Image (cartoon, rainbow, N blue to C red; front, side, top):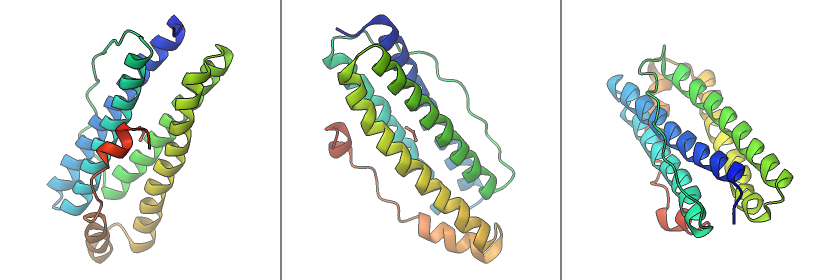
Length: 173
Ligand code: FEO
């Protein structure tokens, strides 16, 4: 049985993942409003991925017999200064999420909850990928310029992001 501290921390993480989904949805709306539908699409896919991150913890907790508590999701910002500003915001948000995951790993270790530590290791790897993906976009936007032709090229590239694999993610693959 999972201890109360761990249950509370994981419930909070479900909320953080849903907030992540929400902030990326807000970024999708902002980018779409700038006629950057490809970038908006990328953010929509990211929002879906965050939903899967939340559900993976949700399912794990139910499997362990832990009581789920869903908290209110805060309203995200709705405006950014530029597409680059939005992606930089996404990168900072991912760095914040990495810190959250690291704190959960620390807690799982100190509470000797090896099963939770094990599942959190999946998130540790996932965060490396999440940060790298957004950082790559930020670098390219800086290189190509956050205006005109550069934006157009990036918009086309980001339109190709596939939908996250629900089956693989849900199965913990
Ligand atoms: Fe679920 Fe992008 O952190």
